[in-house]
Length: 393
Image 1 (cartoon, rainbow, N blue to C red):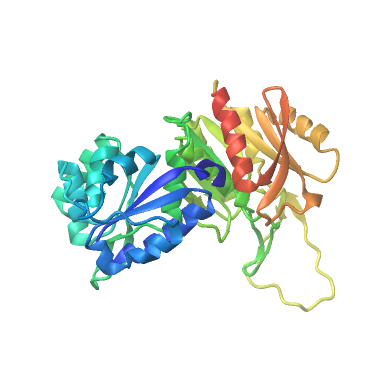
Image 2: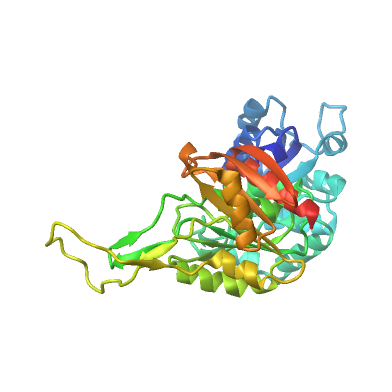
């Protein structure tokens, strides 16, 4: 969500971890999204990666010495006053412990004491991460307004395996985006469906459609950014799970139906952006169908109508938003679908314009008696849709 980070002033704190090299990628991705970034490093971090790298990329000197020999500027106060956010990535167990105790003996911990809250991205050995003292430090910092971006599990630099690897760079940047978004959906549960369903003809062939799932994933990310607890139910896709979102993978319409009906029971908002197949083969062959004839006739039957079932069973105060991919008379067909399926809103687009698989889209959002045309990158369109919904919640 580029528009959320654009023109924000971000302090990037880097501590003495082997993962310090990933800070370059974090910096570049933040800059790509329009943020202005300045860097502070601990002396240990400067041993892993040269400060000159960050000075070249930012055009500003790196803040390293908390007691400089020749400088009259009190940098921990001027930089903390300048910044909209302090992001510490990577953050070692040592630095995290110091911040939790109010110790300010490095440039990064001085900034933490001045900023008082921000985002911390731990990176350390699994035993250090699991240590009860470290876990207590996390709890303390969270209670004080700090956000902790959980590290990943995997092969660590020390040769051990377990939880402690710095979180994915894209997840860290998403966490920054979330930080600046209004939490108008906090305490709400949002269920989003995405991607295409598959209906099998035999073990190796199926009926599907070209949906990439990008719109649904963007909606899930935006809803999370607005503070919701998000469940994303998706068909097969190569897309990465948005940061902080619970993902449920399905294939067939029946699997998606069962997952949706289970999750929507206690949901406040349901958004059906998945391209759900309307028909399936009447019979699925248990063996691969051989190419022995010139023609093959398939008998198709209707699949379960997930959106209609949700609309029929929705509770008071529950919002149900549908999608309509049309080739003609988009608005008229969408309004009829809204009425027929008891929807509160619908997002309609014309599939002739090549929306499947693309990063951009153009839609009309019919909601609360209004029609709003939205176009742009799918992430930006999703942001506007969720913002519109959250303002009516």
